[in-house]
Image 1 (tube, helix red, strand yellow):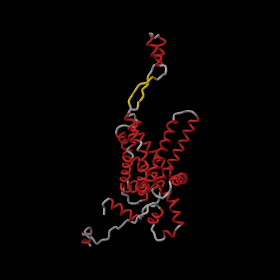
Image 2 (cartoon, rainbow, N blue to C red; image 1 turned 180 degrees about the vertical axis):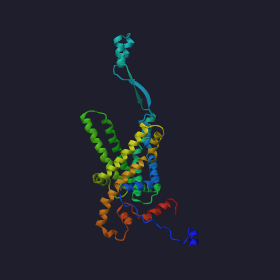
Image 3 (cartoon, rainbow, N blue to C red; image 1 turned 90 degrees about the horizontal axis):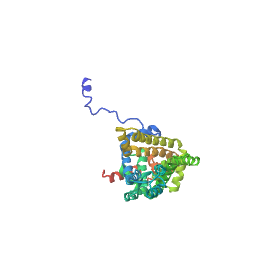
Length: 349
């Protein structure tokens, strides 16, 4: 007995613990969200870097809006400025005229566009062409992470763009313009105390929230099904109401990220300021996108994929769950074939 205990660690014939009997989490709630987010944190961070670099024209737009490309100039603040100047050239100013000049002869500082400003605007306009492509590529990667599939971030990103660019490119332009119009409408109505303008402001806030809910589903459907853009928008509008609880959670998470970013940049200093600058570059955008994709995909699966499988059981009699889902979805290859293709492209086999 002593000899057996002594050499227990060296006995290779002993039974080990084996594979854990713990079943994978199949729920679509917060527990699965946090587990998949933690397990794929590095991949989600890579997605964020792709989103930032892929939408590089946005940096030129930010530079223009910040005044980096503009020159400072001074202009009269009142229309009487020129008249007062003419009076002073003709005669010596009286005390009354000097008082009037003190009130009406002020100048204000303005920023004037330069050639560099228009160049930056031109480069920034490319954002409309990169926006849809980057969104469809990252939506495919994040959807696969939410599904629990093996993911090769860069290969899957290019794979999705190659398959969906004909829809993603024109819709990205439409999507970017809609977002710009909604943001502009809120910006121009937020500071007015007029009743009509206030009503317009809150109306635009409702439209922003509704379109936010719709965007949770638009790109996920684009990479999942073969549908026209009109049907995708129609389905997204329906899902924005059917998945109200999940959509609200995604919106809450997004607002929390934005709130932390504002606090880090404008309210705190020191290392927290550095964190506020690094957060969007490393994880913020992809984390918000993952919240939307996670909220959308399982509702799409519940409403569109599962009922179809129940209505057509004969099509999936000899297929396992993953392969059956592939038949319904836009991906026209099985998971095994898709992984083989990705490995070949990466030189792994």
